[in-house]
Image (cartoon, rainbow, N blue to C red; front, side):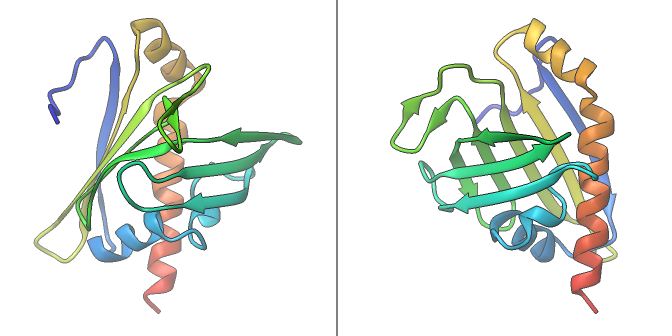
Length: 158
């Protein structure tokens, strides 16, 4: 997979987390952890289905301001402990989605002090979709999610 970023269609950020990479991986790949960080509070994840393999489902439902939103997608690539690529372009069984939004790429690597370098990339079909995602608050929203993830994962270390 080409990870060269295209500024017209891609959004991304990198952050260093004070939590081991394996724990971050577990949080992203085990359904019981997803509700604790996946959407910015006070919004809530209400359901999660994970079939962790290329072509396997990654379905979530969440509640935003009293409205339930279903997001059905699939994993495109799973490199244990290092990389997750998932999209809403398809649903399980490679069925095309009616109105796809983006493909997400999460990259994890170790820091020298036992933490994690966490990179999140959102790839969009068009510059307009990318701009809409940025205007919706990509950096604040995904930044909040990674802060929630780090706090939650740190609590699991105790």
